[in-house]
Image (cartoon, rainbow, N blue to C red; front, side, top):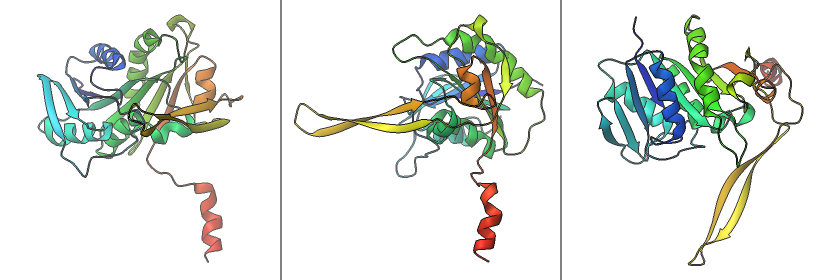
Length: 254
C-alpha cells in the first residue's frame, strides 16, 4: 500500500525544517501533502482556533497554509476538509528547530500536530532536531536518520491513541550512536524567563524564552539519550493521569 503522508509543523510553512521533512517524506512516498501554519507557532501546544475563522491559502496542488492557524488546526483542517476524501495514512510533524524533550512537550506545537492526528486514528510521528543556540542547526542529521526511523516505526503495530516523539541529537550524522527507545525525562531545571522591554512609543512589552539545565539525566530518558548522542524515540499518548497516585487518592476520598 502506498503511504499518503501529511506534513505539518509549528515553525511555519517557510521553515527550513519543513523543507527537510519534505525531503525525508519523499524517500518514503510520492504522495506527500503539506498543511502548515503561515508563521511560527512555537509554544502553541495543542491550542485550537475557536474564537476566529481559519483561512486557508493554497500554494500548490498539495501545499497549503493556514493564516494564524495552530499546528493542531492544521491537522484538523487537513483531515476534515483538505484531505477528507482521501485522508492520510501517516502524519509527520516537524522537523522542529530545537529538541522537544521532557516537561516541555506540553508546550510543543510540533508534538500537538502529531497528537491531534492520533485522536483521529491516524498514525503519527513528531520529529525535532537539537542544536546549540547561536550555531547552525545540523539538519543533515535528521535528514540522514529519519527515513530509517520512520520505516522501523511503520513496521510496528499501531497501538490505539499512541504516537511517537523522535529527537535527533546535536551531532553530525556520522556521530550518531544509534536509536534508543526511551521514556520521557525531566529537566533538572526548566522555566520560562521574561525579558521586559519598552518600545519606541514607551509602551512595555516582553519576550518569553526557555531556560534549561539538563544536569545528569538518566540514560533511559529522551533527555539523557539525546544528550549522549542517540536518536530518542518515545511512545506517547494524551493520558496525563499520574497512575501511581490514583490508588492513594481513591482511598483518601473513600
